[in-house]
Length: 274
Image (tube, rainbow, N blue to C red; front, side):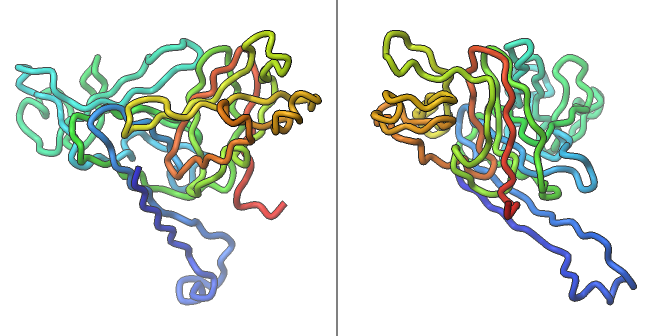
């Protein structure tokens, strides 16, 4: 997945040309992610300037996407799907309007270059939280999306539910999976190998259209068997090599955590020196 990240900082050294005193500044930027013909799992690494870790779905700007057929002769139209962990299903789905306005589009209350509600045909009014993930299902092999906004300096904790939880890297930097967050309430693998217990983390590969990376949670307490197998407590490890996972979650990267119980995921701050 190609990524472009540009950060623009307001430098304090040139602030006197604008104002007598500078008390704060925002760092803003954007990410551009290439899509494939099929499913691409994406996360949001930016927030609306001045907000508290939130961004409108309309800030996901498409290029080369296929818009809905406003003549209603076909069902063409690329989609954006958002997973609901509480419902364990896709309760929110938006269609892309298309880039060129036409009478049918306007007559249905939609605007070009936007996502709209499939039920009401109204422009989607939906806010994503920092760390949220979503799918874009594209019919083009050369489409892309660009998300712009303010760089978050922290991210809220996320409550995990039993079942599938769709999570994203909330920061505009690539981070190793074991450095991205800490988790509580997860079930570790059974190191006696008598059962197959163990919560997992799955990463979608858009080029392969499949889950090519699956990691298991080691567990919170070190055991002799865990150590003998080269794993550490509180980490994700490779199921094949039984080694601590080194995989990185890129800017805009997302993944599933499949949990057997309730828990909490707390993001680490990659910008902190602590």
